[in-house]
Amino acid sequence: MSLEIKALDPTRLVKEVAVIVGTRPGIIMFAPVIHELRKRQTPHLVIHTGQHYSRNMDEQFFEDLNLPSADYKLKGISGKRTHGAQTAAMLEGIESILLERKPRMVLVGGDANTNLSGALAGRKLRIQVGHVEAGERSHDWRMPEEHNRRMIDHISDHLFVTGEKSKTNLLRENVQGKIHSTGNPIVDASLQHSELAKRTSDALERFNLKPERYAILTIHREENVDFLESLRGSLEGVSMASAAIDTSVLFLAHPRTIKRLKEFKLWNWVQELPGMKISEALGYLDFLNLLANSRLVFTDSGGVQQEACIHHVPAVTLRESTEWAETLENGANRLAGTEPKGIEEAAIAACRIERTWEVPFGDGIAAQRIVDVCVEVLEL
Image (cartoon, rainbow, N blue to C red; front, side):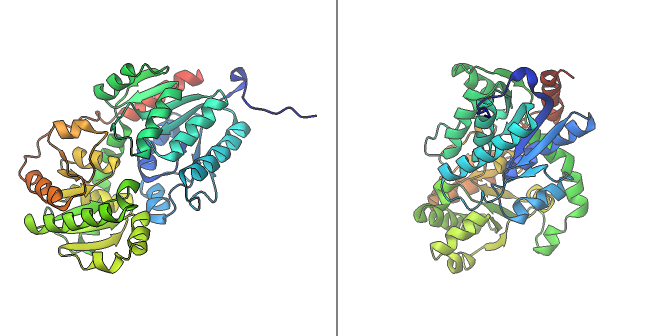
């Protein structure tokens, strides 16, 4: 008769770190951490949940970031159409791998369903959980990402924070885990790959763009693209802004957004919007090269807000709130919502600022500090 295993014995866990990825921001964030683990020969495994399902949003990023293939990749996740079904499937899949490998530590990063699933799986099995990018708050309860990041923080053993604001948020909420001030490894990734992007990417030539004569648009958050009024308003606003600042816009469309545009019968309409050219989402090096040379970025992505700030490109955020309040305070970013006039006004203001702000996300060696903690936990 076999016993049901609901939790692992912490004294019998293997000295190994499980790194969990599954979305574009997570792959970028953890690339420097994985490289650092490999450099130090720290035992680890990579679990890919399969939350993102486009090659350009997934496999291409592994290639661009020079990452080995994940040790495990869950199947069928992208077919799940609700948060509950997706999270449950990832939780079950991650749990089965953790039961097999019995690592001493699980690392998750950010606020996607992937990270909540990984943190829950580790917590329930009594494996130490580390959350990279802990303590970020938008205070916008409409956003599933806000629910996720709060839950992850309160069940994590190690909280790796980007800066003082995130640390203050965690202290105010009286979290149980230990707080580590590390900076954000997205800075490491962006700085490490910017020169490579300049040398290898021909994206500007392919799209016939001149440096600082175009803007980029990315939009994918469900509170924007799952609602016709918000999606249409955002795109109309970006088109109006394009005319107001005399700058063309390259719309790098997320697979989710393309799907919604077709469902809402906006696919032909958006391709005829003045000032806008549409393309599928690109690999990391192409995106980084386009970002660094752009005049302005329109986005609802937390990761892209950070990357724009790092490369001193002004951002107009198509949301009512942001978890990256530092970018508002230093002038790198403006909240515009999804009303066309507000987007136009924010773009005009963004183009007038000096690109001299300080980057508030760390010094480019966050991965080293995170792996220091992992080594300590593993007792290597």
